[in-house]
Structures are given as C-alpha cells and as structure tokens.
View 1 (cartoon, helix red, strand yellow):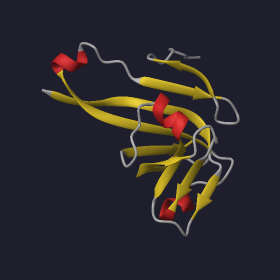
View 2 (cartoon, rainbow, N blue to C red):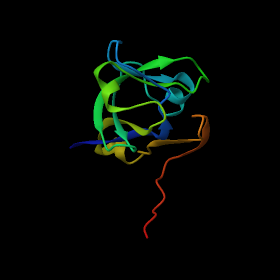
View 3 (cartoon, one colour):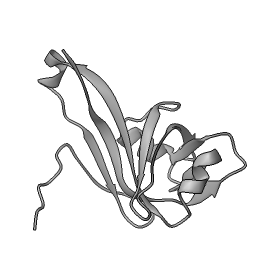
View 4 (cartoon, rainbow, N blue to C red):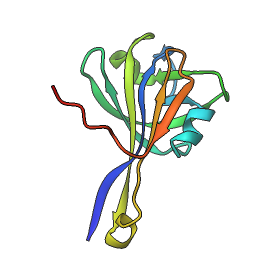
Length: 126
C-alpha cells in the first residue's frame, strides 16, 4: 500500500508579495525551501490563516535569505502581503518508507527567518 503523507511544511510564513500579473506559482526564499526539502516546481498547498483560503500551486525559488514569500498569478487573489500562510508539501510513501518517515516542519519568526525545525507537531489542546 502507498499513503500520501505530509512531507514538509513552512508554518505561518508571512506573505511578502502578491503579484497578479505573473505566471502562476509561489516564490519561496531558497533557504526556507531547502529547510523544508521543497524542490522548485514541486506541487504545494497553501493554507491562508488570515482568510481561510486553501489553494494548490507550485514552488519557485526566491533569493536565498530574502524572506520572500510571493503568491503569484491568479492565486494572488487569495492572499495579500502580511497574511500568514502555511505552505505544505506532500509525498507518497510505501509501508517500508513509512517506518523511517518524519516530516520536515519549519517554524519562522515575523521576518520569515527560521526559528526552529522539528519532525513532530506538538499536541496542543485546550
């Protein structure tokens, strides 16, 4: 059996640009892409914490250490600069791969600089 699992996420990154007149995609700081093991042109899902929008696009590289998160093309209607978003990448794993499976979770500060990384989401209820 194969299962589609969260490969990685960039948690609560801040949108820096929304470029409507641009071929679709999401430009992501190359440092953040590397930390989350997201490759250029890889499919990503974006969840906008500010307005509840959820959409799919693909990643492109922005300058290393720039902090850029740019939502481009038609998706620019779904996010504005300053919005907090979660960028998630998924991958398909077989049962053997799942024995070693650990997602790459990247947490940032208000300037989209890496604050910490993890392989587990802490349980927080109530």
